[in-house]
Image (cartoon, rainbow, N blue to C red; front, side):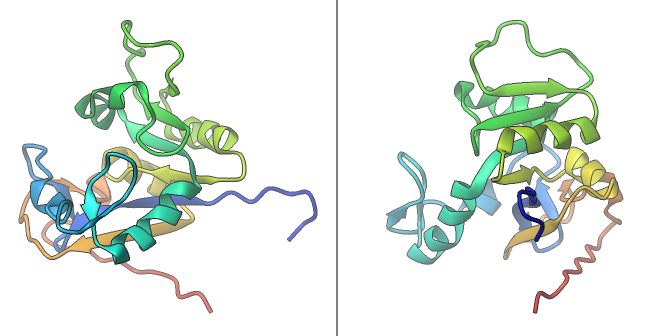
Length: 184
């Protein structure tokens, strides 16, 4: 490690079906999140009930996030997360359309139209914390650009057969080929 240097970690992480989908064709994620409410411990204040094992896995990961990068579709589907970043302190939204006119200017959302610029801004905003990348089309573009340091798949034992792909258009039909580097 170089003294005084900041090393960023960019992680593409989400919950995925066994066959590599993050949502059904009509954007439903129900079966992937049915595990919520299945435990007796809250993940965060007013958050879902999860098992103690899931909390112990997710909590440090969530606490480490400084900025999240999402596409306009995810931003719209979550209703802008009620003016709060869904994870971390900032949310960078990749969109070719301008930011919504009616939005709270103090909300931690930053709109850019290029995935490379999105990751660059997210790194600045995150400081020495993790940059989290949402899966799907934008995540696939960021992955293809070589800007992802780590891929984390939380695989749920359900099969969708069709839907929104984890890696967006980079992912093949009817198969997911995950490969992970082993750390020693």
